[in-house]
Every structure is written in structure tokens, then in C-alpha cells.
Image (cartoon, rainbow, N blue to C red; front, side, top):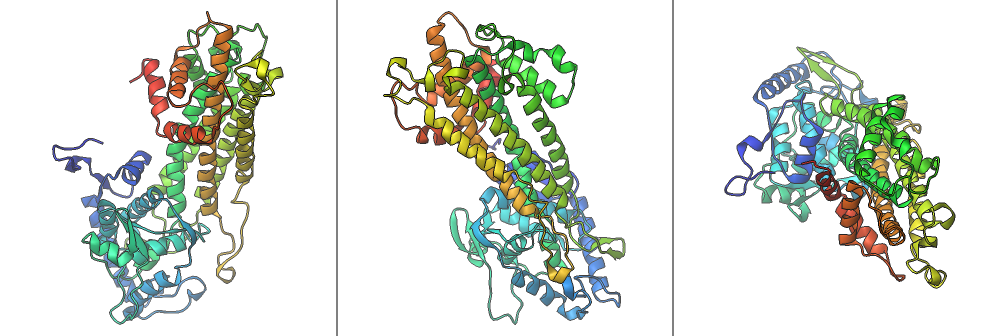
Length: 531
């Protein structure tokens, strides 16, 4: 991010949200790089008009769900106009049932921005102040402590969003107990009230419908999925680099990546992956050096396996981009009318998360199979067993044998996590909410799949680098491809060639952290002539 001469964020860098045009890259910029956002003027007008309509409806004879009625099974219970503010406050307090470890701060920040943008759509009936306080908290680095367990993703992420609202919502004047949850003020965890005060922010009393509007929407599920889409791009590119490194170490057959072959079955992802593998291995003397007719699937079918993952990711990005730019609470206000519906239901997000974690689990399975081939003597095209650097001491040394065990364990865990969560449902609210999406669990499991996948890819890079070193010792005249040379050098700057048995755990963890920054992708792209 560019800084002005004082090192602070310039006005031109502030993201303007209007409920319709927020991007995944902007979400990442706010969630992870502390970029600021503000409500667009035209959106502010629409939001204000919608809030006025809600005040009229609250005082009318017409029953409006969650405005002048109770919620859930209490929808038939009328609420007096003077009690609408109490209803909003009570809704927050009664929904504080989240459990477990907190969501990571970038997930919470992403959720805050997404919720602000959902409300900026202008159909939720909230005041602009509610959106402003969320954006002010982001700007002042106030991050609520949000337990990660306890949401079904319908009627939205109720408990997580209530924990969020507890931090910035003020109690009623006659409320003897001011519960404000917890929040980080920068890096210090304290009560929500203390965090807001430390940042110079004033908590607000929630008005008519605002308690419902802030909690109604699969916002944390969406935040998890949005950042997972960003991370999936990086992990897939690293998976391709690791695949190319393994392909060269195993003297792979290049014809499997010929453009004519892939143009005959032109799935976009498949064609693109084949192109990138050709680029990574261009000028290689190692490919085809074994005179094999064809390879095992884990080498030959890299484009056909990774390609559909890219295509799945493209679909998921479309789903989540639509969701972050939607009005997702209930009821919604159009003109002078309120319409009850189910835009809060997390099914689109839950299904998309299930699709992506299923696809990404295949990436780990593919990588683990190559790790196996590299370490098993009968499948490695003549490499030493377990990549022991001194083959005559095999048995005394076990080489990289155990890395495949760890990769296999992580792969099995991902295969279990990839089981669809959205097929499971338990009715809630006395059966009124009779089919729940389980979207939040699906999205949480997706992030776990990605975390494991990073480690599997790091292991393949370590194993493939060792294999390539050993291959070049036996073929000193051979030259790897341009991209694989850069990838190999990168791995070697962080993980040394192993002559003797030694611990690998710290190397795996360190390389996982480093490659997840995007550094490896950048260096390899530069070697191929990219910017």
C-alpha cells in the first residue's frame, strides 16, 4: 500500500462502499492491510431514506417482522413503538451464545466491512450511523473478540454478529448492566466499552430494526469464504510450482502438456494449468530424459486435476462477490413497504464453501501422491530410496521418509474435512427454521483445508528440491526449466539439502509461512519475465 509523506493513508486510498461494488481485493486490503473505508454519499442518502421508512412502519398498524413484532417463533407478538429500541438491545443480549476460540482478526475485520456494505445497499432500514461506527472501528483498529463456534449460517451468523454488535452498541438508559463483550484495541484485549473508549469512539444505541439488521446475514461465513478465495489463488499457484519441480525431478513426459492436447478438451482451468507448467519447465533438459511413453496420473494429469479446481474457484468467487454486494437481512425495505423473505439464508455460501474445500482437498491428494513417488525407489525413476543422500548408508539414514507420512496425515484430514457440511441440518426456533445450511461450519472447515494444504505443498517443495539435487548429481550436464530453477533456489535459501538425518518440523512450518506470503510466486514469475 502506498503511503503519503507522513506515512499515513491518503484520502485517495480510502475505499468507498455503496452496497454494490465491493471486491475481494478490497476486502483483503481492509482485513489484512488496514486500508480504510467510508460510506459513499449516494449510498448514505438511500440508507437514510430507508431508515425513515422503518420509523414510519414501526409506528403503523401494519405488522412488520422484527420492527414491531417479535422474532422467530414470536413473530406474531406485537411490539409497542416505544419498545422497538429495547427489542433491538434485547436481541443482541439474547444472541450472545458463541463459544470456542475467537475468529482470527482478519476474518472479523472482513466481516465488519462486508456487513457495512450489506447495510449500505439501502434496503435494511438502518441509520447511516450504524454503518459509520463499523467503518470507524476498522479505521481505529478496534476488533471485537468473536467466538468461532455456534452459528448455523441462518438466519445469518446470529451469534457471531451479536458478539460484534455488543461491542459498539450502548445499553438502554435504564439498563443496570452494561455488557459490551470484548475487543482488541490494536493488540490489547479488553472489554468492548474500554476498547471503544481507547479509540475515541462513542457507542450507539440501536434503533428500530437495527438489532435485527446487524445480526441477520451469513456475514462471518462470507468473510471466511472471501478470504479463502484470496488464499486459494496463492496456494494453487504454489501447488503448480511444486508440481513442476516434482515433474522435473521425476524426468516427466512433456507431451502430456502439449497445447494441442488441451485445446482438444478446452476447459479453461485445464488449458491455463498446462500453459503454466510448460512455462515453468521451459528449456528443461530433464523432461523426457527417461524415454517413458507416459507418466502416472499424478504427473500426466496435473492440468486435468488442478484445472477443475481453478474453474471451481472461479464459480465460488462469483458467488461470494454477489453475496458481499447484497442486502442479506429480513425484512427488506423497498419504497414504503417491507418485504419478509430469506436473504439471510447461508445456503449459497455454504454450498460454495463445500465445493471449494472438496476441490482443494484434491490438490493435497495430488501433491501427496507425488511426494510418495519421489520417495519410493520403485516409482522415482532411479532416485535413491527415501532420497537418502548417501545411498550406501540407506537404513542407517531414513532420509525424507517421514515427510510423506506427515503429508499423508494432512491429506487424510483434508479428505475428512471435505465431507460436505451443508448436507447436515437440524431445525431450530421450534421448527420455524426447519432447514439450516450449516454454512459457517462449511466455511470454517474450508479454512482448515487451506491451512493443511499449505503444509502439504511446503513438504512437496522440500522433497522435490532434495530429489532435484540428487538428480543433478547423477546428471550433471542436465539443466532444469527456467521457473523450476528459480523455485529450487528459493527453497534452498530457506531449507538446506539434507546429507544426514535431522529434524524437519521447523523447516516445514517456516517454509509454509514464507510461501503463504506470495513470495515464491513473485520470484518465479520474475524468472519467467513477469513483473
